[in-house]
Image (cartoon, rainbow, N blue to C red; front, top):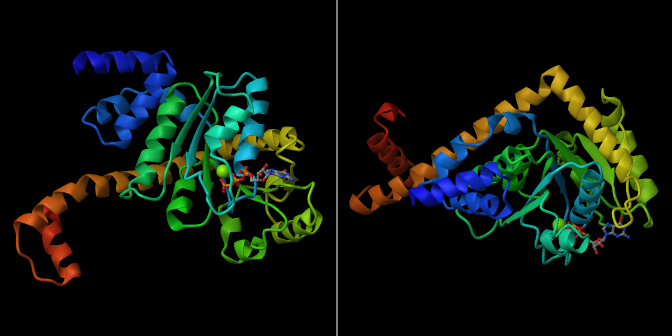
Length: 310
Ligand SMILES: Nc1nc2c(ncn2[C@@H]2O[C@H](COP(=O)(O)OP(=O)(O)OP(=O)(O)O)[C@@H](O)[C@H]2O)c(=O)[nH]1
Ligand SMILES: [Mg+2]
């Protein structure tokens, strides 16, 4: 195992794609080597990398936009990481992100690192796993690392907090734009993108959004970016705005604040993950009163004596 681990760390250091994939799997499965892997990452790269969130309703074109953006970034020689959270939406028939990236000709490109993670069918800890994947990619020189997630549930919204900057993608004809605004989803968006501007209704949607954005401080945050992800139209402009806003956030201290709060989120997520098996084991061994809240409190008091007063 020791030799395996050394080979893996060496592979990570050399940006070997298989080592990166394996490291992410080990961390995701909370393997005993997880901590050694994570603490041996190049922290300088982790700190300097740019982490982008791309979110929006199913089918608006997030994966297509990501692919387009990746093509643009590759033309600038940037190494890119992609963490796709639940990309297989059966509702819209959106293709798996991996497929799309492959279609766009990035499959054999060792400077495009892709990882998919499912939201469903796992026992929480998604933030922790996604955050670790982002850092492993960033440490291997990926910047940006793009997190694509369907912006509907709370866990997906938590994922977006792992990002330094978030793009909210909307598209005409999906009917939920107004709800999105009402739900305050606009607040998580740093940049608003109306995709599918080749389709009917894009102009009206853009105007509605521009009205909603009036009064925002930064020029790029009060603009609506219009794209046709399938052709790449508008992508250059969007990429420039992303870098501009990134620079603004880094110099204002906002970047550091966000990193700090996303680390907090991950720490809590890890703590809960690590506690879970202990709690379950403890529950099996002892008969507790049936009231769940009271039982939970007693369990915690047993496991964590410092919490005796809770
Ligand atoms: N006309 C048009 N179609 C687009 C555009 N961008 C994406 N599409 C199409 O919209 C469909 C959904 O695109 P995806 O990129 O899979 O959308 P998504 O938001 O990633 O979907 P989920 O991952 O399922 O949430 C596909 O058929 C795309 O080809 C665009 O700018 N114009
Ligand atoms: Mg997708």
